[in-house]
Every structure is written in C-alpha cells, then in structure tokens.
Image 1: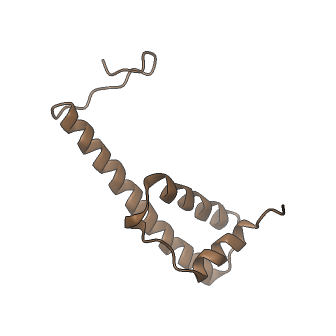
Image 2: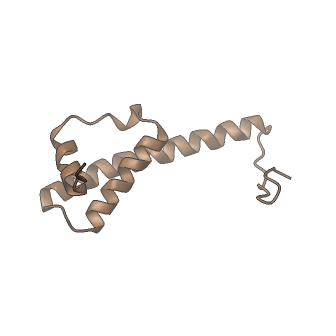
Length: 94
C-alpha cells in the first residue's frame, strides 16, 4: 500500500470540513497538531496552506491546553485541592 505524502494529508483536510477542535478528544487533537507542525517545519506547504495550517494548529493548541487544565482541576478536586508531586519510582504520589 503506498504511503501518503503528509502535505497531501493537510491539503485533503484543508479542503474537507474538519472536526471542531472543541469536539475532539485530546489524543486526536494532539496527533493532528503534531502532523501540522511536521508539515510546517518541513516547509512542504505553500503560503496560503501554511496560514490555514497555523490557524488550525492554534485552535488545536488552545483546545489541548484547555483539556489539560480541566484534567488538572479534576485531580485537584480528587486530592482535596492540593496537587502533590508524583514519585515516578513508585508510581504514586507521596
């Protein structure tokens, strides 16, 4: 099966309606953001597509930051308002 060119993926997604960032799960938004960054860093996009990709990337970044903030607030509620350091050796919070 032939591999897709990442630039073609951005062109295809730019021409098709994309899911609103607010409706995406964190992992899906992060994966799309990573693809956008790779394509922009690789210089494979024409100027107009780069601008559209930057705009989409900004939306995805904001969405991911919001979801991470929400997760942190949920953890604080579970820990009675106090975040504790995570001990990676034991896999538990001290």
